[in-house]
Image (cartoon, rainbow, N blue to C red; front, side):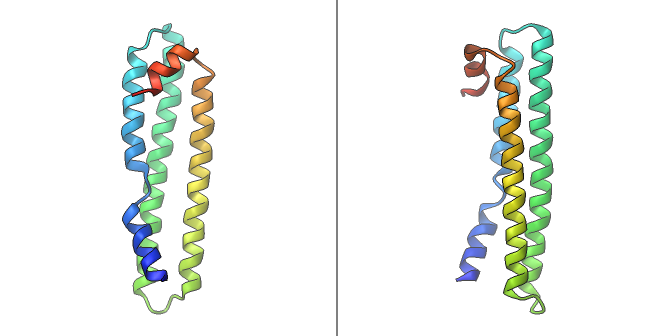
Length: 122
């Protein structure tokens, strides 16, 4: 059962790649939305921090997945070792999601509803 769960977990990846694409689209729409230049600069600053946060999370997640694979392949590591690493991955995902949520609210507070819709709606 642990093997199946691990294979599913590893095949799903971090989920950061689709998020990076969505952030790039937001950035493109933010450059086109009608706002003053100081507001645009603030918006793009937040989006840039979203990008950096996502890139760092993806890098850490890749490293964590390699560690899990090493633990899985090495008979010296127990299921408890793998479980601890999976717990660490889960905690990092929660931290990432919390950071991204905070940045999203920061972005939302910089624009009105119409501008927000133009930036985040595909």
